[in-house]
Amino acid sequence: MLNSHELFGFMSPETANQIMEDTFGDDKDMYKATVATIAQSRKLRPIFVQRQPRPQRNKLILESLARPGMSQAADNLLRNWLLKSQTEMLKNFLDAMGIEHEDGVVEDLPEDVTDEAVAKGIDTILEKYDKETVLVYLHAFNSMNECTWKNLDSMLQDEERLQF
Image (cartoon, rainbow, N blue to C red):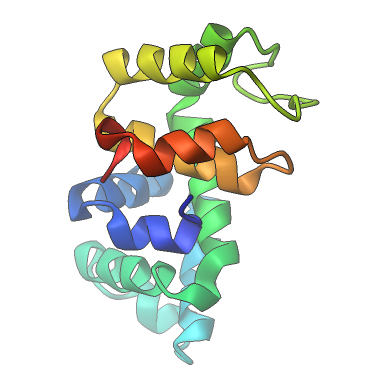
């Protein structure tokens, strides 16, 4: 299982840039908070980072988010992006597994689920969505929740179709 900062290191530049562009377009507050966090970690003033052209700024942000000390910022950005930009995928995954949710958000996540349910959920979203986006979601889902499903973790490690 990869945590958030590792995900930013493994994902393609295209997917990482899509996350940044979606966040810039859908949630300016999250984007600004991420810029401020990155600026602080690099000992720069936020205005210096904000004034850079967006492609250059996003590159700096993404390079920074891949560092181990940036896990919390990476978690926040990924969680926000998944909930705002990938809601349908979240809903499809949870629906396929029979887990009740409200727009992809689960109040009480079960501590474990059957192998069959996890496989069904994975198959459902792999059929409908970009593979790399699915992988980012599955790793983030399993690493960010209080309940880590061992069977999902095993599938992410062992199944060839679930590798970056």
